Length: 383
Image 1 (cartoon, helix red, strand yellow):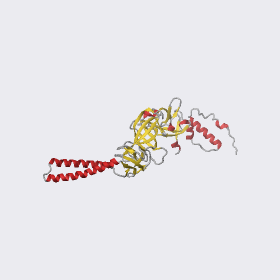
Image 2 (cartoon, helix red, strand yellow):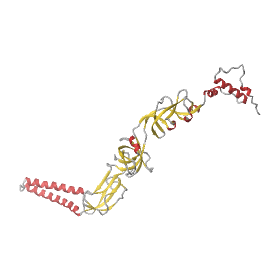
Image 3 (cartoon, one colour):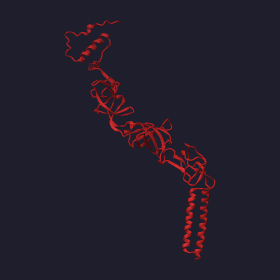
Image 4 (cartoon, one colour):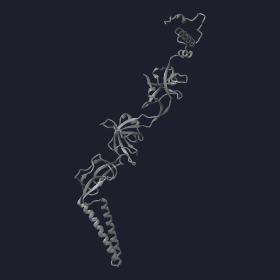
């Protein structure tokens, strides 16, 4: 059924003076008349009081808090075997390399054969002669001692025989330590590791002590460190210092579930002409990992942080003059606070400014706010 709207209901009676009443009463009376006209029932007077107080903006807030925050620096690089985990194998006598058992980059276990050599005939002869001389010295000492007992040899002759035997023992022990003997000899791995490089070719004749291959212990275990050769942007260098923490992950690999902690040990002071970046060196700790030398890694360097106000990214707004946030006072009024951005870390900013530590910071709905706007907290609206 159509209801005829009579506008005369909106005109106050001459005897009713509202000029001295509050806006709340006016709005409440107007709402009551409208409800009566349209049959909408009664309306709470408090609802019209809220309207009289002005529009409210629904917002979410977070507590204002200060803390240490740092801005991570991204870096990429390679794992290079640390000096404490690299070993160069050599043969202590003249020999010929006759066979490789491993390839470059191949991993191996302790005791596995790495290569075979055949000792030079002169080295074998030297070992045999040392052993033979030892036998002669032993027999000569026995003979001299027998003569001395019969008073047919002097004390000095007995001492000389003892000296010859001692020298023979040392010479034979040295040759035994060198290990030169006839036929092919397999050189075994001294630990679990990986082959970094060959330094000789199959068939080469090796001089005593000449490097044959370079090995690195696998992983970073038993206190072995790995060096990281990293590169960073020149603009990031001032924030990096020796001792800063670095978190490392293998690039494009899923066998490293958690980042491996390390620390910065040196920061370059020149730009690489090829990469246009600055070299930074780091070392990893003693935690066992699957990072082999040569692994490509991505790292997050965490410089020493400073104390700032920590606000969510969504709380920060900017205009032509500066960045700012809104705080809410106990009367539910929004106050604009100018801040300076110092650090950006993930979903948060570290800012400096005259924030009130007892007032929450608006994290959502701030785009609709102006200074001194009335707000309504979303947590209260859901009640």
